[in-house]
Amino acid sequence: MRPDDFAPGTVWLVGAGPGDPELLKMKALRLIEGADIVFYDALVGSGVLDLIPARAERVGVGKRSGRHSKDQRAIDTMLVAAARAGKRVVRLKGGDPTLFARATEEIDALKEAGFPVRICPGITAASAAAASAGMSLSLRGVARDVRFVTAHSRRGAALDIDWSSLARGGSTLAFYMGREAAGEIRRGLTQAGMPGEMPVLIACEVSAPGERRLVTRLDLLDLATKSFAADAPTLILVGAAVMLAGDASALPANRSRTALS
Image (cartoon, rainbow, N blue to C red; front, side):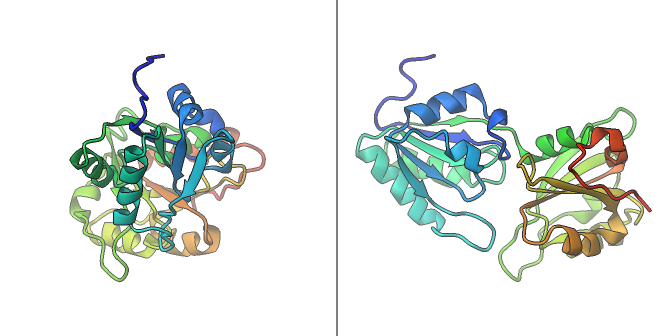
């Protein structure tokens, strides 16, 4: 342990991982236990929140799609105020802070105010979903790369995505916050030339006790998502490597599976 990495007035952006507290990094746990105040997102798992010491102040700042309790500017202001008060600050973000978590805005606000800010990475949902499904995101000869894509846009706006680039094949595509955009994902990829039978994994509440997974195909994506995902946080994996997630032996007994049709 470095004794000088969490002085009063320091802010750490900490990755809470996908929800399971056992997937939390050891460093993240040490920072949470040393914090005076923790600002946490709505998608941080309850088991992780239970690790916050009783003496520390907890502040929920929302940031769940469509239900933001605080806007980004307000969160930035709160972080700066806590650092200015000489507190050891943890900004707890679901998954990894550097992946679709608006870390740059918070880092810039804190640096402009003259306060040190550091990042503790976390396990991202795509990695956790692949692990629980017993598959690899990359696969020699099948998936030479992995592409992380946000499926969240301003309400009513189309996704600003190069569908042709994504549809070329040879990749595993991980769409974050994909539930509401499932139809647009299907249309964008199929219109760009991806075959409708391309395997898809829909994963809800990844790593949480209520995790559910469904293996289907691209041309059924929006229909399957609507009936399966309901209102749950949803990750969508698309690509030939997903075929391996259809192996029932890789799925825990309490998880659901639909075979490719």
